[in-house]
Length: 580
Ligand SMILES: O=C(O)CCC(=O)C(=O)O
Ligand SMILES: [Fe+3]
Image (cartoon, rainbow, N blue to C red; front, side):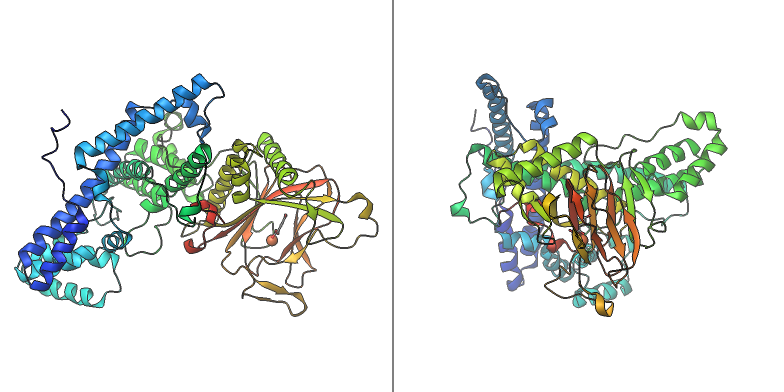
């Protein structure tokens, strides 16, 4: 009976919010509290119902391995297979829709404007609640509301004064200062008994994975037309599916950052999940639980295999427990959504060996097959996009140059001009490099892509004699190098927001083309790197790292140049999917 649930109506929270604000200006505190609390509750309900519906529908109408493995949903070529594929899509849509309707009334009723969303994300409701609770003398609730609001608005002077005032009031307890919106519990060594702390961190890790699942499920929402002219967007079925799906993948990748962020901190916590395993191993060590300590140390090392302190800890715990027994203990299964660096990546040259602090050379980052596929992608894109063999190089008259951005690759993929699978590989491998660089330099905040460019340079055979120039003159990636005066000017048109750079090399079957680091004079070479498949040179994008490329005198040299920024507002557009 479809009418079964029709008596049930969850009131839209934007409506409740407005009612509360209206009551506030009339000084009707009870109405403020009633409606604002309900608004917060309903918003949380809508969020959790949506996540629950998507998660349970994903279990009930699984797409199977074929889709998951491919990443981008490309139905098989046979029409019967297509039918099967779309039947699953339709079933999932139907499941999500009826689940949400059953629990929320009409799901569209709970769509709110961007303004309301912003108010809730700034935690404005708690500002109203704090006043209302104070007025009716419910101090514990007023304090919690004030504290919750202040977490997201640390520059709010008035609330700070309120909190100081509450702190001095009789009857106010330390535990009243709680964050009512905290989704996971970031933990500290507040307690002396480390046995207790271990339990605490275990709970936090559990909460983390629950929140991660929820975050990912919530990514499967409506398509965000941001950046498109809505009226002009006219994708066909597969383009539309791909656009939307890439947007969702991107959103899911962002959950890691999302979960490590709390209101009021503009930067996410560094190394959020791994640090929990660091705390855990220490807590277990303190309570002499060496088996658990080893397990957690090994889990931490999945993220930072070269961490010296942790390797020493592990060696110590293993010695205490007995090496034979220690060998049998492995790292915890770390669930999806958490990327783990691969064992086969090696540091070939440390910053010291490269004569600079912000430099590293890594090998084994991608496989031979992957190198070949990306080089093929570059050539296919040049053939289909810009004319065969690209254009004369902007850097040297003796070379041709062909470049493809991720965005261009996605477009060519959508148009069927290059395999979508290769586009996806470009996207995924550059993400892998981003993580590796972020992890190697132990950055305090995440790196965001600023620009990604798959570039091949080819020698023009008849123009190699007497050649003295470089393939890429010495430059600095985030400032204008004036080598005559040993200065670098960090002003536009230089890409001043670039903070780190990485070049992923794809091949070595060419002559010349070595990468060099120099002094600010652009002449004195301080280190050189011979490109080869799977090799990454990563470095700070600033004046400490002038660099260039020696002439490519024979053959084609291909690489993925990646520039990263610490400033999320400069994130590369395609990573948040839109169109140029
Ligand atoms: O291809 C290389 O090795 C370096 C390229 C580079 O430095 C750049 O494009 O900014
Ligand atoms: Fe560069």
